[in-house]
Length: 267
Image (cartoon, helix red, strand yellow):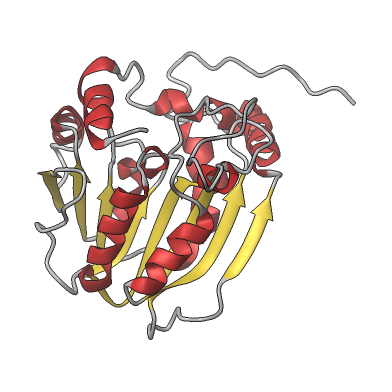
């Protein structure tokens, strides 16, 4: 779990996308607060970038921020429903290319063409085979100093190596892949001539370090260095802090006349 077919069924059919994916940013006080308070501080060294590939954009939650940071933005998703939604959402803007893929292939992307590959809150749902497939291609798709910023599962760290299952009592409420961990992604990168620049292992929605953000580049790029690893069990505290700031400052497009302050923290 979850397979490519299950992902297609979920995001192309069953899931109704009630707020274009913005609903998943509520813990940060909204999508704008999450982008500027949590994601951009991690991504800032790599943007703007002339050519960006976004893998699994959904309905464009992060695309809206990546678009002005690039001259060309390529969107690839297994869900035709998502790609059509992005086409409608960004129809007034140039410089975007749209592709439905099979959940594995990046054949539509030219070799040596990408300055940045970005995926956030999507590849957490794919197993090691898919992660490995993408990484094997990124080794040829990246420019010499291109970089990949990938948010993926780390739940594989908790599985029993003999069975591939989680211990009794360990839950998986966020539908994370069981075969993927920060260690497995690092090993896969190395096998394809990529190097991990950094890996942040994070808790998402609880206390377990069930996710990771890997920054990878070509082995001999200017980013090449010893991998820096941070085990960050305060990731959700960061989300709480960003959400508290949103109560005061997020009165822009997110509010839409529906701004509801969070409960004030107790001292």
